[in-house]
Amino acid sequence: MLQVTFPEIAHVLGDMQSSVPAAESHGCLCGALCAARDYSLERWFEEIVPEESPGASSEDSTPLKLLFEDTVRALRGDQMEFEPLLPDDDVALQDRAHALSLWCQGFLYGFGTAEPLQPEQIPSNVNEVLRDLTHIGRATVELTEVNEEEEQAYAEVIEYVRVGVQLIHDELQSVRAVKGSDQP
Image (cartoon, rainbow, N blue to C red):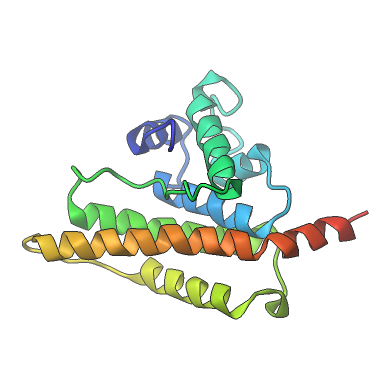
């Protein structure tokens, strides 16, 4: 369970003049945590907060620090508590779907840039989820009228992303461990 909300993170990032939307920034964090052995809060800030940003090291960044800690704990824990940071259900479905698309794009960016993995290091089930996240990241939704079926489909995609990201993190645990022991 996250200690912060989507609007809080969006507000903090806006105050810090970040050009990275809240959903995308959390996706970036999650992707990096899946690929890198030691991905720090400072490194995440380098990705999402401009250098000249006011408040990047002050109390104003507390919600981001809490999000970082909650995400690390959820991914590394054994309770399957991980959840992507996305808008609540009271936001229009089209906007939530767009945020999910941005989240997946951020995940793929973080995954690909944190510590690049060799293709042979990535299990086939992880590749499958990465391909699916790529498709979700490219998806667009144009709705004129939202009904229960669209809401249900969205909920199912969120659950797939949630479980898929946890699977990626868990499957790459041994790869991250080996990468860490190879470093001087």
